[in-house]
Image (cartoon, rainbow, N blue to C red; front, side):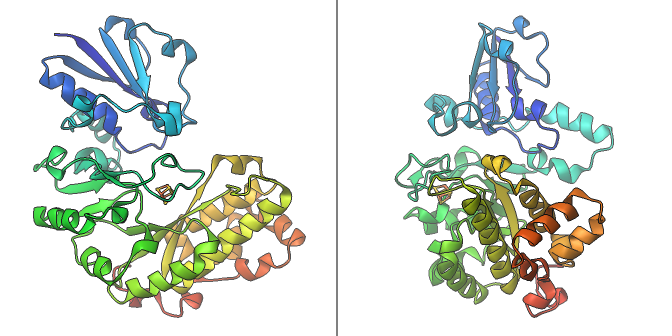
Length: 375
Ligand code: SF4
């Protein structure tokens, strides 16, 4: 029997991180089944006392001490280290049932200290996995850019734990697989609420997909992506199509801060901010929610604070649905950084005023209470 330590570096390095590391759970599951003793380490102390230490991270900006990576008994991996070139786990680990109890002690400590259970729901309530992997769209910023199609990855049974009441799918572009319908039927047959955590590709919706998708026991909010204002026409037509099938709340990831032309000059940054504001206006018109996601080079933008302010407003549905961006800035106070960033931007680009004054309830033309699923 070997003593194995598993380190989820995002758990240590990111204060608000609340999602289990699937690779860590699979490694733990594999070793436990082979009779090893597995511990989840939540610090970097005493690692020399283990026969083997696995360290994984998902986010590139999670810090890990350099000297830890040099330990002779340590193996590290994940997109946080290698991004789109991350080596795969060995097949026997990749396709092993995750150990859903790996985080149990750590979560219990948090709950005993008064944390809200809901914040830890992905550790407690969900079976987690990929039915498919990959994508065919090759977006330049995406970790999946080296794939050229969506491939089958795991049958549901491989990661389904019947004791868990919900299912969280991490598929990159589920609707892009030719067998999406069969897999969706399989999900529905299990009769547990499910969600696609990474968002679905709205551009692929048609009547058949809408009918199948919007009739399932979906968990939380249907989430799609609206990454580029150039897709406005197709996205709008699909939103209208989706509304024939559901009144549920729809949310769209709005990616920003990435220059597809690779120029990164001031003209790009201003245009990108307006592209984001225009997408939010379109979403308002269709009673949809945005979720602003920033490529990390937004930090280099002269409008960095504008991106942060828009994200703080748009990513809080309770505020986004009640206040315009300008009202949000006023709420922060005229001395606040948010107010200053937005005012400076408006002075430089007066057309921003139009977007600052848009208000969800007015733009979508119906009161929030009339939209089923938003209560
Ligand atoms: S569509 Fe989504 S998953 Fe596919 S390459 Fe683009 S960002 Fe990645």
